[in-house]
Image (cartoon, rainbow, N blue to C red; front, side, top):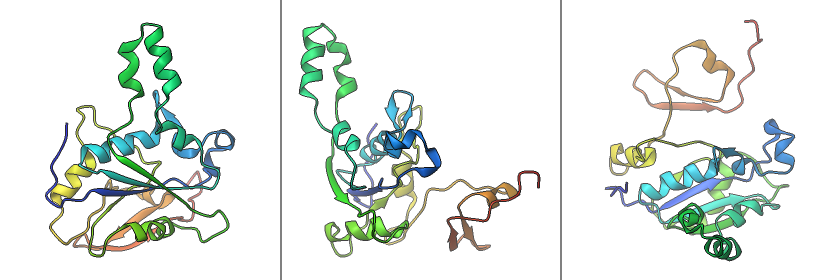
Length: 202
C-alpha cells in the first residue's frame, strides 16, 4: 500500500547511532537498530513505513562502528546467486531492498549526545523551508494491513505545522518512562527524556 501525502515530504532522518547499553550484552555484537523482531531488524519496520508514506531519501545517522546497517541495505549478489542456483527463487523478494536512496552520516562517539544532535547533523542535506520526518531507528512501526503510521501522521498535519506520533497514557506508569508533557489544549510543553525511576513497589 502506497500513500500520496499532501505535504510532499520526501526525506526522513533516522538516528541509529546509540550503543544500546540497556540491551547489553547482545548489543556488544549487534547494532541496536538491527535487533530482530521476527525475521527482520527493528529499523526495517521504520524504513518500510517511511517508504509506504512516500519517503524517497532516508538519512541514517550512524555510529562510527556501524557496518551491519550498511550490509543489510546493500544488494547481496552472492546470496541472490545462491538462491537462484538452488531453485529458491521464491525467496528472492525477501532479499529485496526497499525503494529509497540511503544516506549514511556518522555521529562521532566523542561529540555531543542527545535527540537533537543527529537531526542537526542531517541539516546540511535539508533545503531551507523543507519539512522532514524524524523517526527513531529503534521504534517499531507495524500494521498488519500494510498501512503506514507516518502517512497517517502526514495526512493529519496541517500545512506548515508539525506533528508527533505518540501513544496517550493516562495512568501513573508514564512517570517511569520518557514522555511528552502537554497542556490542556494538547500543545507540547516539554519532553522528559530520562525521568526519575519510580520504586518497583510504589
